[in-house]
Length: 432
Image (tube, rainbow, N blue to C red; front, top):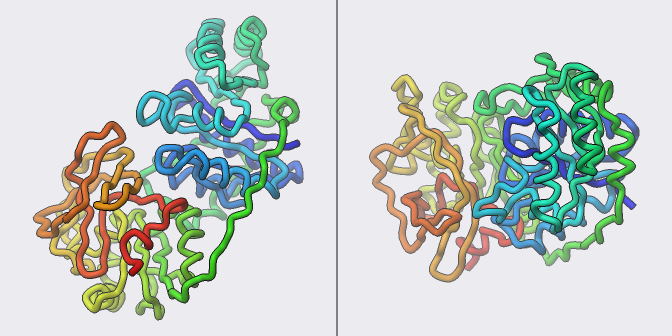
């Protein structure tokens, strides 16, 4: 048996991310090894999960990968845990197309109960029909309990308890507003070195939640049959030497992508900000991140810029996603119009001027197969002379898009963050 549950909410902004992290730390503080998961393509929540649980957090995504793959990795990473916590994405039933890829779909697939986090700041007993609707809309999932956020008194919470009793959902407690545990804006940058600064905040989250939420009861009512552990077969590793960019500017990586890379050879991490030369490698992975926050440091490191350009020009294999593609461009232009020279391999600039968010799931159709990924960026390409050949990009609803997937020499570059934990992208583009 295993305590396991999915934290969901009626909508974004309900506070499920803060409560998830507090519960992860609270469960860890009980002496349990807790495994965290995140529904959907998010990179930032998984890093915070890792800090809160002291275990790597794994993305579960039924749009970018098959249901069998999601079940496999859930079973594999849960096999050695004492408890698992899955954080949902957006509202419980929000998917790429109706419920496709939603938290509800993943809860059904994994057969785990759901804990709803309700923003009850400006409501009382009216949460009853909300709870009733979420409980009964889709009978194949189980709403096991509810936590009410932004409730500042026991008397206010009593209305929520009454609603839960009438609907038949366990009331697990409430969380008062506390500005000291609020999370920073997501585009302020994720500092890999910020874990120590984060410790006080995550401990405060756990302590704050434990005062008014019955964590022990939550664990009790959400204990169910442990999922079957699936051992992944490993073939003989090719002898590739793989360089992975990892620092404050480049850190958006799916753990399963790195695991897939490790099956091809040995991973060596390097920093385009701090290192002056490339490691001896056959293949470079320039992951996404926040290069726009470190433009001066990246631009001043001319030896690294030149080394990566020369590697690409000489036929070296490179995968550059989003921020990595920006780094391979001639320049990155900041929001004020200042120009910072970059590697200069791609004949284009990337600009932060007139920032506009572009996001969504992507289907990447090659002549022989379809790959999947996610696009999320504020920048745009300027005067790009690079062309996309024999590759078409579509949204989750099959609308054709103008997102570039650039093939130049042995370089693949795009704004898309590919998911290749299930289907190794190296075999699609570089295996001979």
